[in-house]
Structure formats: C-alpha cells, structure tokens
Image 1: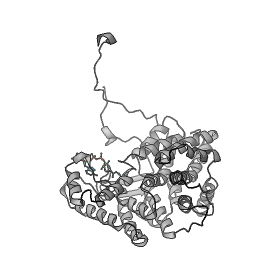
Image 2 (image 1 turned 180 degrees about the vertical axis):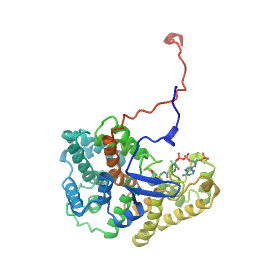
Image 3 (image 1 turned 30 degrees about the vertical axis):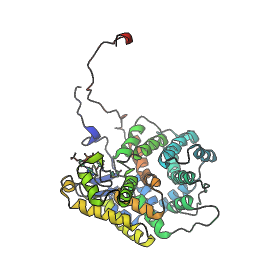
Image 4 (image 1 turned 135 degrees about the horizontal axis):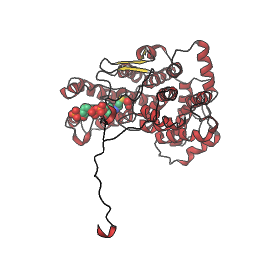
Length: 392
Ligand code: CMC
C-alpha cells in the first residue's frame, strides 16, 4: 500500500485550507469569518450572515440591500419544476424531495453551470438561496395535500418560508414576529460548521468540477443521515419514545451506556466539540422561552432536561466528553413552531445552505484544489485464478 496512512472517518486528516469557519472544540468556540457565533446570533440576520459567509465580510447597508433584493427576485420556482413535486408519493420524506428538486435545478438553468465563470456562479448562488425555501415549503405542501403558495416578495426570507409552509390561499397567514425571529436565529446557528460530512461531500463532488446545484444536492443527501442532520428528527423521536412510556429515562440511559442495540443518546456527542456545543447553549435558552410562550410540549422538554442533567453528571458521558450538540434542543423548538418531525432536517438544510455555497466557492477558487480522491488500504484476496462456473 506504499506511503498511505489509514484515517477512517478522517478524524485527523485536513482535506483543505479554509478561511470561513473556526472551531475550537475543546473550548467550545465557533466563529464565522472571525465573528463569534454568540454575537451573530444576538445581532445579525440570516441574510446578513449568509453574505458574510459567502463574501467574507459583513456587508455595508447598500451591499446588504442589493443582496436581499437580488434574492427576492428569484424566489419563484419555474412552473414546470412545480409539476415535479406531483410525481412523488404523498408520504415521501421531504429531504429526498429537496435534494431531487435541487438536482433538477441543473436542468432548468443550463446556461449557468460553469463552475469557473464568476457570473454564472453568482447567479447560481442567488438562485439557490432564493429558491431553497420555496422548494422546502412545497415539499411540505405536497405531503399535506395543500396547494403551493407563490412567494410574497414583501416578506423576509424567514417570513416568506413560514407563510409558504403554513399559509393557505383561503385565509391570511398571520406572521408571529417571535417565531420569525426564532427561525432566523436557528438558521444563523446552522449556517456553517467547517468540514462536516455534508460540507465535505459538497466539496468532494465539486472537486470533480460538478456544478453548484449538483454539489449541494449531494450535500443535502449527506445531511439526511441520522448521525448528521437527521439527528434533530432522531432526538424528537427518542424523546417521544421515552414519553410514551416505552421505557423511563433511567432505563433508557442504562441502554445507552450498555450500548444495547446500538442505542445512543441522540443529540449528544460531536466529532469536534469535546465541550458544550456553543450553539446548543444559545438554543437551550430559546427553547425555554418559545416553549413557555407557545405552550409547546413541556413534557418533552422536561425529559430532555433530565437526560441532559443525568448525562452531564455521569462517568460514561464525562469520560467520553459527550455534551449536548446543536440538535439536542432544536427539534423541540421546531415542534413548538408547528413543523412535523419530518421537516426538521429540511430546516437544517435551509440553514446550512450558505455554508455549503461559501465552501464550494472557496474550493473552486483555490488553486491548490485537486479532485478529491482518497486512497485505501486493501485487505482483500491476493491474486487468484478464475475458476470456471462448472468447477465451483
Ligand atoms: N450516545 C452514547 N454514546 C456515544 C454517543 C452518544 N450520543 N456519541 C458517542 N458515544 C460514544 C461512542 O459509543 C464511543 O464510545 P467507545 O469509546 O466506548 O467506543 C465514544 O463515545 C466516541 O464516539 P464515536 O462514535 O467514536 O465519535 P464520533 O466522533 O465518530 O461521532 C457523533 C460523533 C456525533 C456521530 C456521535 O457522537 C453520535 O452518534 N451522536 C449522536 C448523533 C448526533 O447527535 N448527531 C448530531 C451531530 S451535531 C449536528 C451535525 O453535525 O449533524
């Protein structure tokens, strides 16, 4: 195998240099382009944070206005793309619908797929940012059998998404400013996280010079897995299972620690954070505020808090440095907002989109980029002679 080092799961191998997101997992620090996540969560908006991630600096007022306006102009989907949603079964999970629709964007915008044409990359960037909320809302509408709503360009990105998701043509949808704010915050917290599984996928696919839509579609599929973005859905299902008295908290924790049937405490642990995930700290506060106000399911929040309390004081978790990650509390918030469990990972995808785009663009512009092509350590048979079928 020559000079090849095995590093399963890439725990110790950097695949690129990057100037976008900084994480210090031991200290629980997360910064986008140098700005602490706590400050962005408190003061920024998702649109502004998207600009920051993609272009590297906080926009001036005119840059932000222009960026916002450009995105507004592209929120509608091609009418033929709308028809595409009808082809899926009613009970389709919205994540594969999302990735399929994003993949299909390559067929509608064939004039802007060249990864090395800056203008084409720019228009693809805007189209993706503008259309993903519409696609996500339509994936939901399809699943509940309600008509698709056109976007309303008087609304902000988060407002528009909520209206297209929960609104119906027969009545006016009353936006709840607290809910809009909470959604925008959650999107900011998910906006980038350096070389995680989906982002590495976006870069790897893009390293073959596949276009932005194709690369992001692959990233959405990577995010679907329960060890990654699918964890927010898995957390809620876990809380509901415990609540439905399948087993109580202590029995559940014993199962986790004995690694029975591979049961894990979902929403706990992280490849990089060996300390409290700073995003979880911010979200925990929001979860309490929102659930109090919206009268969400407090039983589940109680269970979550008990699980956290037990875990933080338990040797199994302490020794392994397992702390709550971003997904531990997000599901509870999404549920209190009225999203069905199946939409949780879609919300993660909406948030992660600017990060994927920023990382793909950085990869394409980096002269050091080569096609991603890991090596392997071969452990199979050595050479052997073919045996005719009649002799086997
Ligand atoms: N519950 C119980 N044990 C755990 C957990 C958990 N959630 N996470 C890790 N462990 C144990 C694991 O069994 C192993 O124990 P041992 O040393 O005895 O073999 C040890 O801790 C190290 O775990 P690992 O699987 O080698 O760690 P990793 O870096 O490969 O995995 C992880 C990281 C996030 C996939 C994992 O912690 C996990 O499966 N967590 C639950 C799923 C989850 O919440 N995912 C969301 C991640 S954050 C959002 C995102 O990026 O998508």
